[in-house]
Length: 129
Ligand code: ZN
Ligand code: MN
Image 1 (cartoon, helix red, strand yellow):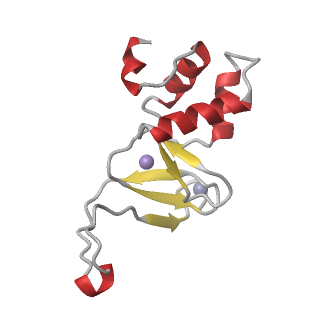
Image 2 (cartoon, protein in one colour):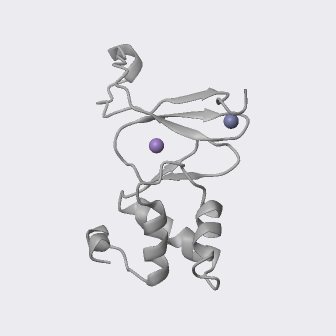
């Protein structure tokens, strides 16, 4: 419980179970995936609890919502700058840590100050080939 106090969200045993599931999780789970996993420990937990917890974490910048999977939102507890590669068959998502050094010339940015980028790559994974 102590380790999650800095998140500044209301902590309940169910929320802690959700946070435990997300901690170090590299699978980019959907809300449904999280619900199914945590429900084993808390059979009475509602889907709304998962959804509301994810919204609270997202609003505090402690989880990022990914839209790379067109069928459902996916969540990533790693908010550091990185990119994603998705398998178009099984929808598995892997992290790409690389600084692509993209440069946009001024005529493309229309006066914006750029603060970052996030690139989505698509492919077919090793298991699906
Ligand atoms: Zn695949
Ligand atoms: Mn990621």
